[in-house]
Image: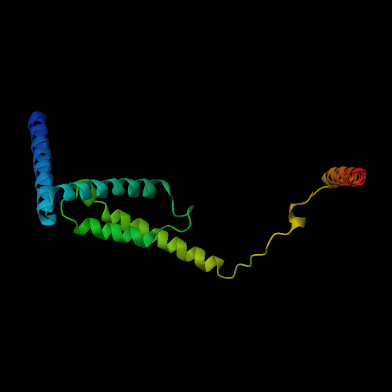
Length: 170
C-alpha cells in the first residue's frame, strides 16, 4: 500500500525545521527551569546539570572507544544505572535522553563478554614465573651470560681482596 506524499517548497521546509529547532530549544529551557524548581536552588541545579552532562561526555567516550571485547572489567552495571538515571532525571538534553537504549545494549554486550571470560577462565591454572623463565634462551645468550657472570665474580673477588688489604693495613 502506497503512502501519500506531500510536496512543499524548500524554503517552507527550512522554515519548519527552524520552527522545530526553536520549539525544541524552548522545551529544553523549560525542562531545565522545571528541574531547577524541583531541586530548589538554581545554582545547585545548574551545577548538577553541568556535572551530569560532563559525566555523560565521559560515558560517551568510554562507550565509543573502549570496546568490551578488548577491555576486561567493564562496569556494565553502572552503565545500566546511568541509563536508568537518564530516563528519570528531568531537564535532560534531548540528545542525551535518546541514549538509554544504546547504553543498555552496550552494557548487555559487556556483561555477556564478562560472563564468557569468567566461564573461560574458571579452570585456568596460573603458575608463578621462576628465575629460569627469565634467563638466556639460546646457547649464544648462555655463553654471553656466563662470561658476564665470570667477569662480575672476578670483580667481586678483587673488591673483597682490596677490602681485606685495606682493613689489615689500618
